[in-house]
Length: 306
Image 1 (cartoon, rainbow, N blue to C red):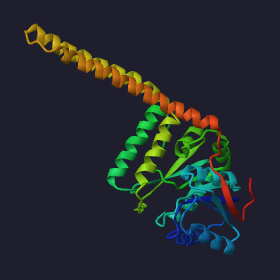
Image 2: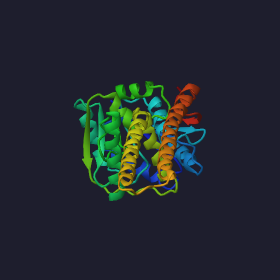
Image 3: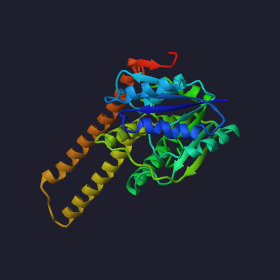
Image 4: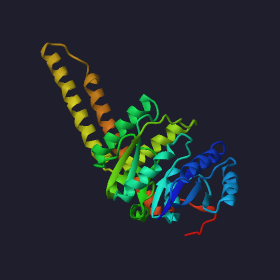
């Protein structure tokens, strides 16, 4: 049995070596053969050099450097495609991850589960947990995809699941949703650890990008939204006209502009909404038609290029 650990990295020079040491401390007590694949997602700091030093000391450590920052999802796909283990464990560079539950994840896999999620009951603050729950419930509603709440970038996949995920040709992959979409037998392990959030001014922007990929890539709901927006605006317009007519019956006359203005605004807002959602899907079609790869590799260490 061989386990592949896949770890995307982006500007992690301050933590990647400590992360590696903590992970190795947890793995050495487990009777498994393993490989550890670090995917450097175009880091601008000293991350790659540190990974190079680590890989020189341990030939089980494999490093893939991408030519630029392609994003976490593309980095994971790159790592998945190069993993040769019977199962793959996805990790993020966080020092507070509970590596002691890895044996439990492997036992769940051995018992027949093909995807093992981990669910952190203390991830983030109450504000971020609330909005993540709302988002996942909304995604389940519009895309019929059941994603466990509070799941982490810390889960195990059987190699057959990895094969199916990597076989998908779509771009802007949202792996959390794809994992639920492909099916197979899945389970969840709960843990409770206060994990420090990574700082950075682009965290919110990146989170919104991933969230939009999850909705647009897995649901046609935005196309249907224009119908409901039109219906709501039409009802509001009818209520407005009813009020105006009632006022006229009581000899309270409004100028013509009072009748025209809400009508014009309603029509133009409806047209803009329909056009904006059409453009979103046209943009996605444009990206798919180009057929560009998810990532470009610039360098590898201890790994045979596929």
